Image 1 (cartoon, helix red, strand yellow):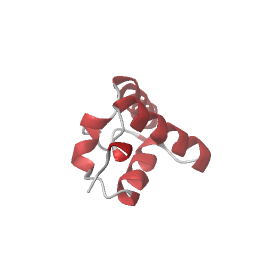
Image 2: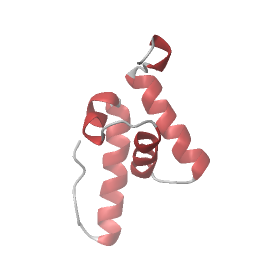
Image 3: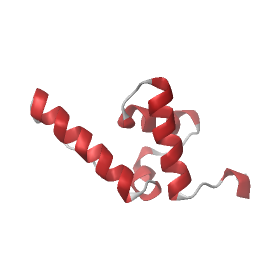
Image 4: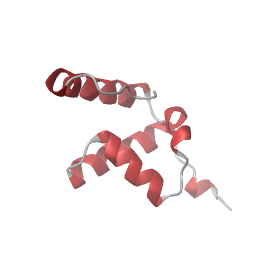
Length: 77
């Protein structure tokens, strides 16, 4: 059962994702996947849990990747 200590705001969740990515030298997308796996969070809930700023950063990284490697997929955000 979740307590108030377990509930994160969008800002807190997004900050944790960004910090994890930096400290573990992984992409933001990988950071989200690892975090969700560790805390048993459904991936389909992530768009509701992250800030617009983080969504923009993920989209920017995706655009850079696409310009280098070609457009393979789009992010579901």
